[in-house]
Image 1 (cartoon, rainbow, N blue to C red):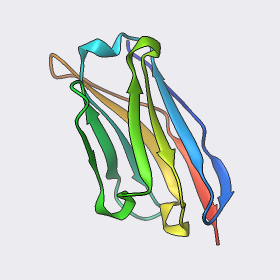
Image 2 (image 1 turned 30 degrees about the vertical axis):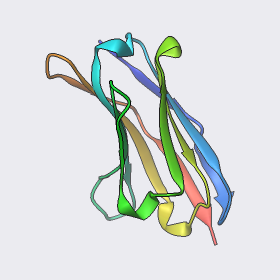
Image 3 (image 1 turned 180 degrees about the vertical axis):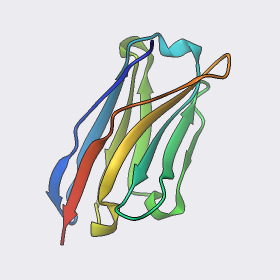
Length: 116
């Protein structure tokens, strides 16, 4: 069973930065899309950013220009660099991978809290 291990969450003041990492226990060359989602209290989980195996990226409008998603194939890792953080970025951030063959994996989630 594939595991995704997330790290890098924490508490930061508005305007600060955090970098999230997600390490997979499987070679990510077999992934189709790797992404980060977030879920704020009493809100639905939403897509924050995604990156395909070819390196194409997409972002939620609310994070464009502030967040950058990247992947390190050698380390089977996807990262999310978050700059200029806002209180509304607070939530649990989840790593997600869609694998070739159609199955998917979710990480356990990492808390990001941005204070005003």
